[in-house]
Length: 215
Image (cartoon, rainbow, N blue to C red; front, side, top):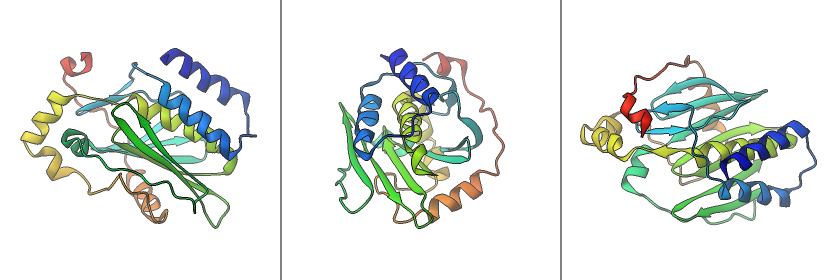
């Protein structure tokens, strides 16, 4: 399944398709939910994930990740504390925004919300698997963002033992930025502020225990 979804991403992105309608977003998100990506190329303290080709890492600090795709900037926040505490919250679909959908698969949950901005761009939020991605894009790039976003979020794998140690040392509680992934943003202003701040960081390799990588 993981190879099929990655192949689907490559074929779709390579086709340059830009004729997707709002109803087609459901198809892309459903494909992402049904995928099971068990390969990883990025390792952090307490979690790991797969970053697809086409995305470039431009910033990372703690649970904050910043990627670039063409002219767009992805901001991702991984909520290690909420995952460890198994926090859950229902999402109510919002009929007054451009696109709104609850995401559910087994014990994983989240939502996708897309708002049209005054400058004719779109603010995309994807929350799933205790992590959230935000990005501002042109309408024709929304399908690409949904594919990339679901690929990353679905692939995140948490290391319970590592997180337990970090929580026991209060390392996460002391250093985590207060950021509520369970609520969609009222405006894009916080996203712009975060990208401006974390986009200044150069990518640094974390020192990770080799045993952690093999898990």
